Image (cartoon, rainbow, N blue to C red; front, side, top):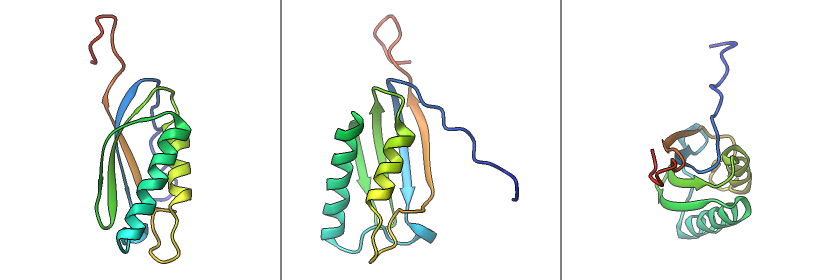
Length: 115
């Protein structure tokens, strides 16, 4: 559809997100074990650089899932870094892939429990 923009990504400190990203044209994001190791290394760098807490991840041939907590509202910046850093000439990887995120939990309330 022409003229339809992507919904605004809601970000806030302390949110827990389920993030998915897939390869270009639903292609593979990793060709072999070395590609998967590179993706994990890059994920670790993104987590450290942006101060995320990565609670879980799942790497599949043509996409990945992350469960990340963002102490600062920086999910978009971190995903841009991760996608740019995982471009692969051999696989097409995630450079211009579809990425989605969904808030799983909000920050703790005054009672100390996540809502």
